[in-house]
Image (cartoon, rainbow, N blue to C red; front, side, top):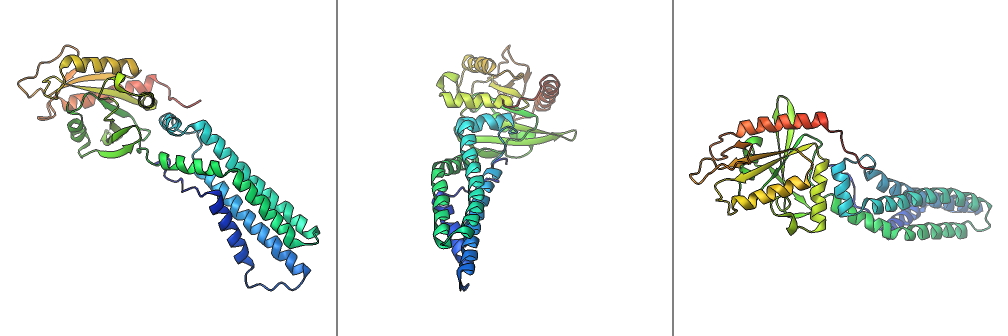
Length: 328
């Protein structure tokens, strides 16, 4: 997944402690017999500490993805979760500190060579490094919190995607299990306590992704907070179509009129092709609504292949007509 390579971000105190300990150990056991050897010892300590701090900070920045190149879905979700502008600012401060400490350590090596007391100059260098690290401590703490949040995001791939919508118990999970051939993977998702179900299937050597987001597309928009609404809009960045499943038997606990209203709201909030399917055709209570495109039964598998064929055709047309969306 795109954020998995981000390691835990240490605090400034942790990095300073590590750097200064390593610098001290580098000189342990070595005999300092005169001014020249003392100068070289303190030069070595400054360079060791500076390199450790500079390299660790550079690695923190490097492990975060470039937000200019991030897929639109992840860009918007990251912006909702932690704020992309704040991330950029903290990464920029960390990068500045890395370069500044690298520059500073070289300057102090030169100062040590001209100093009457190399130890005093080395301590001054350590103080300056510690001060720079202290100035970015809040940035490092923010980056670690952001890392912990972003690593929870599901592995949503840049593949043609079918987003499944509809009230609970209409047959969404059964449909996904039928076409993916296995129980879909349930991954954590920061905007719903139930997680997002993700499955995959192949047709003619092409791979397709199927997503169900319980808690997002299974209740009226008026029941949602602003963050949930933003999370729904993030789905628009995927190369996707929406499969809206109605339970035309009403055994799910929701009458057809309520299901139609939810469908209308999904239409209003998505600029994506929508295929409307009526499920549970095998039940005696089933009455086909006039708004559906196809009829299925996930119990008997009636019509399921036809639905998949239609969705693949819609995805192909969507790919031809829609340029990819990238963040500004």
